[in-house]
Image (cartoon, rainbow, N blue to C red; front, side, top):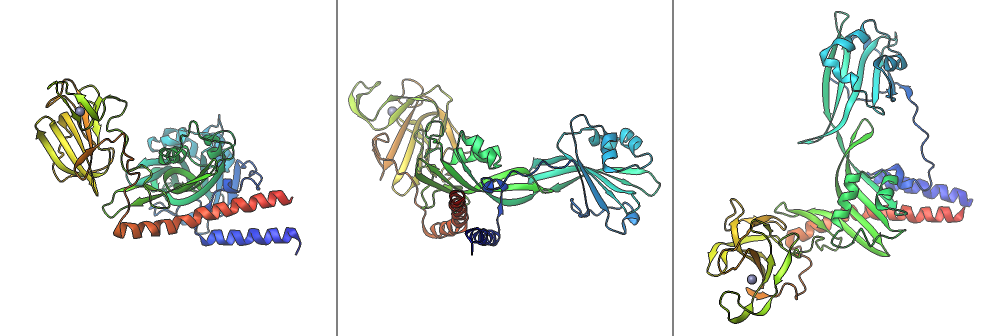
Amino acid sequence: MTPADKKRQRHVTRSVLFAAGGLFLTAAALAVVKPSPPPEPIYQARQTLALPALDSAAPQAAASVAPYIASTRIRRGDTVSDLLHRLGVSEDGLLAFLTHNKNARAIYKLYPGRTVQAALDDQGNLVWLRYAHTPGAAVKSGIQSAWLEVRPDADNQFVAQERTTAAMRETRVAEGEITSSLFGAADVAQVPDAITMEMVDILSSRIDFLKDLRKGDRFRIVYDAYMHDGEQVGSGHIRALEFINKDTTYSAVWFSNAQGQGGYYDFSGASLKGAFLRSAIKFTRISSRFGMRKHPIHQKWIGHKGVDYAAPAGTPIHATADGTVEFIGWQNGYGKIIVLKNFGKYSTAYAHQSRFAKGLKKGDRVQQGQLIGYVGSTGWATGPHLHYEFRIDKKQVDPLAVDLPVARPLEGSDKKAFAAQVQRYQPQIQMLARLQDSRVDLLAER
Ligand SMILES: [Zn+2]
């Protein structure tokens, strides 16, 4: 076997493995070895149906044989008549119909790059004309594509109808190497911007994307995309990823626990958002630290058992960690206070509030970052601020001094389910890593 044969063999093996993994490999993942595809022809004819078969009451007598599908991409400056000409459609009265029929209006919103298709029978008669004017739009149930369909009717006239179909959700993988910028690398890998931004968000507790990125950093992502007619028309969410930054590998996988609360964890099971937020208020300054101080009202030296954050009255207060409302109401000195039992031995308290979040009551579950109330100056407070306490075994400790628990450990059935989730996605990430390693080999042997 020549080295070239070996390489080919290896390539075939990899392809088979990949197919077995049930994944769709984006072209970009192989972009390093594959030349970019030739520019797409603006006219093509094929005999397969590109859009799903539709149940239509319109007559199909002409289509006893599978129709030919002609397809053309809209160019800047095209008119409807140009498109019909390129598609080989010359039905009497069609252009007039498209011009005057209200239901066919969409045909005049010609977006360059989008596709118009025509199905013709073997006599060259029009079976249908379709224009996917909105290939992807977010709706409640996911992503939907909308198109206009025009068919001849029984009276030698035409009917125009707007149609929609749900885009197919597909799991995709992509890999990229940062040469100039993260978004540049994501573009090369054909990763949608929304997915790139999600990646930044997921890892923001680990990587400072403004300062830490280096040339040669790599990412490998498994994410959901919405497809219609072979094109990506929308993006879902990241399922798993790996990011190599300055020789350190970070991982993330989406996991939803038995209570239906989801979040990203690294492959070892540590939550990526950290168990506690650094602060319950965004954009604030600490006005009084934990420790001994002269009380501003009582003028006595006493221990300050929390941290004060100065903020205007009405500033939203967020739960610093997932938890359950243990107390909500008035306590002497604290004024309006919420105590959250977070997990294990940890609880947090938020005092001097002006009002609580609407409807929040004892026993409610709250999630990290959830709005629970608003800054005020109820109780013993000289001015509006949040008095925040971090308690371990009900005893106040200085949240700025203790090592905050970085992750709420997964327990019991969650731990098992999480392991299964990692088992599902880690091999896909590893596959990308192996492909990358092989590529380096191939290039080096040349
Ligand atoms: Zn205080």
